[in-house]
Image (cartoon, rainbow, N blue to C red):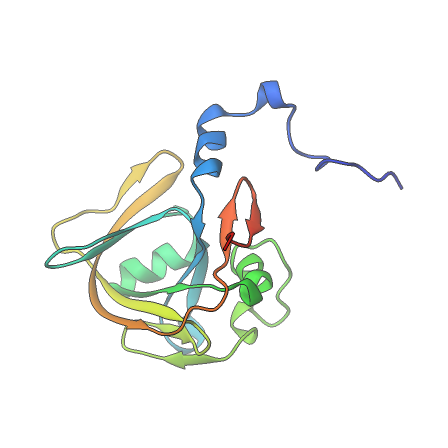
Length: 174
């Protein structure tokens, strides 16, 4: 077995997509989007999203076009957008499909059902959203842009936000 100082599957720097490299430098708090009820729940870790204040406020996300989450959001018209904390990094990897989840991703964590979808009971902040009636889902790059209207927001005490930048989780500097 060889131990590498870098990830063995990352292309050489000269071969890397410059737009993806730029996006990786933007960074931000990792969110978990969930939708559905019971056995029909779906979730996806999302770091490409935008919160737009206004009346009404919107949250716009870039979701994987083949994800169960996108299918569920389009079916139900609702979702929960919750912000994750450092303690949730393994959960984020589970919902990103990068970490095994025997029995399903929702076996990790404790969940409460809302009218918008399942909420992680330890989430420090979350929003219940509904698909915007004014915006159609459309392909943007390798993702589908989903525009939602914020219907409710719960803000708690943020302890240690989970930040994703340059392909890895980082703790924000104090």
